[in-house]
Amino acid sequence: MAETSKGRFEMLWDCPNCGTEKLLGITHRHCPNCGGAQDPARRYFPPEGEEVAVENHPWQGVDRACPACETPNAAKATFCVNCGSPMDGSKEVRQRDVKKEGEKDSASAAVKESEAAKQAAKQKMKDSQDQASGAAPPPAKGGGWMKFVMLGVAGVALLGCLGVGALLMFWKQDAAVAVTGHSWERTIAVETLKAVQKTAWQDEVPAGAAVSGCRKEQRSTKKVADGESCETVKKDKGDGTFEKVEECHAKYKEEPVYAQKCSYSVTEWTVTDTAKAGGKATAPAPSWPVPAISNPGACVGCQREGARKETYTLHFRDDKQRDQTCAVPMAKWSGTAVGSQWKGQSSVMTGSLDCGSLQPR
Image (cartoon, rainbow, N blue to C red; front, side, top):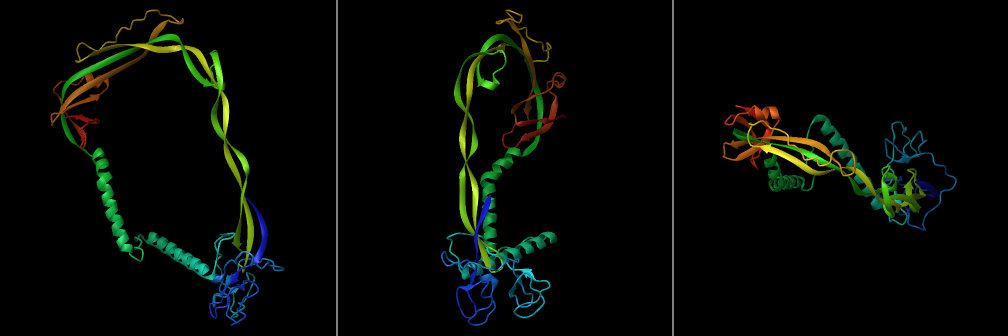
C-alpha cells in the first residue's frame, strides 16, 4: 500500500463547560470563552472545507494526559500546563479511529467512541483476570441472563434436531454373534495391450504418443495488475492535529491462460476381462481361477495376467437374528468354525456389526 500525505490540519473540540463549539485542537488548548481545559476525548474531525492547516508546529508525539487533572499536554511536557503537576507516569491520550474523507464527525460521536473503547478495554482486562482465576465471565447487562438462557435452549433444540442422529450414528452396543458360514472370491484381471485414445495438455503428452490434433483451451487464470484503488482518510495524530493521507492499493484482475490441449493415442495395458473363482465353504480350499489368455506376448493385441485380488468373508447371525458379514484375513477365515460364538459391538442406529471389535467368547 502506498501512502501520500495531503497535509496536516487541526482537530476541533467543543467546550463541555460553556458549549463553545469548533475550538481548534492546537490553537485552543483552553476554551477562550470560559478558560476550561481541552478534553482530548471530545476532539473530532472538521467538516470538509473547514479544515485549518497546521503551520510551523512540528509533531512531537501523541499528547499525554496529566495524572492529576487529565489535561492533555504535549508529549515533551515535564509539568502539566494546567495544574503544574509533574507528568511522571502520564499516559498517551487515545487517538480517534481513522475516518474516510467526507465521513461526518462530531464531539458527541468522539465521546461515544471513547466510552466504547474504555468499556472494551475494561471488559478485556476483566475477561483476562477471570480466565487467569478460572472464573466464568458474567452475563452481559441488559437481559444478559435471558440471552444466556435463550442460547442454552437453542443449543438443546439444535442437539435435538441434529445432534441426536449423529450421536446414535456413533453410539455402539454390545453384540453376541455366531458364525453361520464362509464365502470366498478370487479374481485375476486379464489385460490387453491396445491403443487408447486420451487427451492432455501439450506439455503433458507422454513421449512416443501419436498426437492426432491439438486445440486452444483455457488452462488456468492469472492475476494481472489493473491500476490502483485510492481513497483519502483522516488519521488522528494525537496532539490536536490530524493528517489527510491518500492510500492507494494495487488492483488486480483475473485473466485466462490458454494452452494447447491435444488428443493422442498411446499403447498401454488395459483390463479387458476378469477371471473369477469362489465358494461358500472352507473345503475344498480356495484356488485361483485360470484366465483365458488368447494371445500371450508383448504385441498390440496380446494379453497377459494382471492384478490378483482375494476376499474371505465370515457370515454371522446376531442375538437379534440379523445376518451380518465381515471380511477377514484368510488365516482367521479358515480357522473359524461354523457355530463358534463371538462378541463385539454393533451400531445402535443401524445394527451393523463393528468387525474390528470381534473377539471369540
